[in-house]
Image (cartoon, rainbow, N blue to C red; front, top):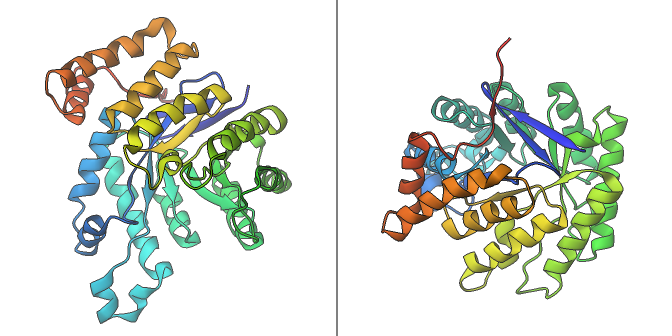
Length: 326
């Protein structure tokens, strides 16, 4: 069975077909979060710290760390700040360093800037997941050597120089190309986590069916683990969390093994915990029973993050396995 191993200094998380679904927390990302970007511009990491702690308490097994901030005020003072290649590398190092002092889960280093990716890899303790490589030639030639150099797994996004295709056959072909090119660099398929690209169901009626079909093919024909930006499926629609909560178990049933998502939403996490139990990835239902106590507290009026933190402090709801120290 394909297993993708991700590690922090003390904890190991395995993404695999016979493993519990891997929740990758998405919230440490200033893209589209003006308040967070403004805080980071001022050197204020308080929201990052809060998001890191809450996401892990709520069930994130890995934290995505994205450095894509726009420093508007500094840009007006110094034109170098208009260049992400200048802004992101030092910011990524600061983010990774700070987060590792707060939580012990593995990290997913996320940027479109190669320098930021390398800074994140250098600062990360353990074996992080790198996010990401695409089928674009320039990206392949830049990122795959980094993956090999640091011996880390990588998210492979199914678009190339022609853009994002609405044709699932094209997206599968791009994924296959990336896996083959990675093999040329000595990177095994078990270290490739393919994102088949989830389209919004509001814009494309077949988006859900496409993803489920693609995930099955990626598993059966390429033998790779998969991930996605789960909330993309509900983009632009009302009551999005209900759609996400339906989508995730269906994707898991099709073979998807991880998702980059918001773990502080109880309805999505309840769906994932139930799916793990139904897929026989929760021995004796112990994780479900522990999670049900959190839901009981929520039903009594405790916010989900607070209930989750209380449960985590009591020793339940922690993802991943402790690494044995040599």
